[in-house]
Length: 401
Image (cartoon, rainbow, N blue to C red; front, side, top):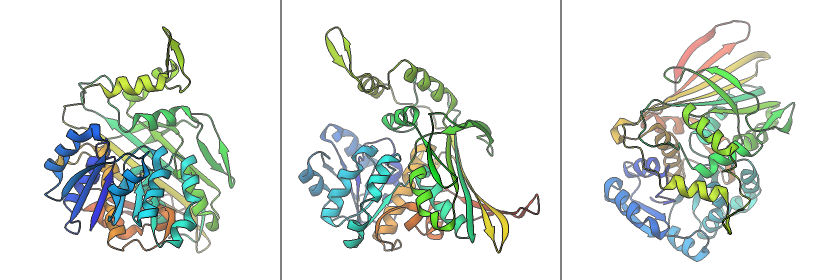
């Protein structure tokens, strides 16, 4: 099996690379990124590639360059920022390569889903939105929905903390461009069977997550789950769906301040006769920050609650995953919990475990049981709880899948 990792020099790519390198069914890994990342790619191939990895340079804006880089692969892991998704999908479709990305932040996800019939006609699968959220939480939703006859609501909560004493002024958990869009763009909720646009930080709610995350204030942000899950489960009667996130508090407060100053804006301002885009300036400055050198101590809880009916009785299914740094790789929770699911999905595509064809969100094509089993091999364990509304206690307790 040959897998290409596009954006292999990026922040979330290490989890993908390490998962693929330790999977015996993967025989070749292509690490692809822009030429200025040459040193990073070479280091990652040498340190993590397990004698399987080679590096190539690819420019997404050059279709021939991109197609040459992915040619002959069984699947591609797209670790680039979401607004390149359509261009990468076009190259994969032309080369006959299965595809997985890390999400399309609602609006791009809708554009990607519109390509479903093209991908289906070619006998190919594009998994739209894989990682922890989107990704793991989508497959959790599928598992829970399949255990109900009718679905009323799906609510997803993602709580993240970081206890490390950081030696950098801004520890960015994932692509800053994506986070800025999540802070600035209006999110959506699904209420009474309709999408509703709401302002950023809408619907603040305190959630008592399991330790070590604990009590966190979550809020609505723009995410691809909000676009795909209501569409996927509409036939089950789904009426309400929300996604809410809590980022590490210190980072969240700093970024809110920077955004309030206008440093997330995309409209140019004049500075001493020069036209400068504030967001470009912020991205360039933060890219120069020293990378944290302390031992990772970030943690995450993924929580999905699905309510509905089973045999005419109200039921609730709650899915949960508690994520910690992965000590065998000395890797923080972020790249581990986001990257590993992408690697696992590419392996499932390459080995034929994923059989649905088309451009589909994870909840519509990734079979939950084998997915959860492969995640557990990387210390990402999924648990499920069932509740009958006539009883205030969870009847079966918590069971690990």
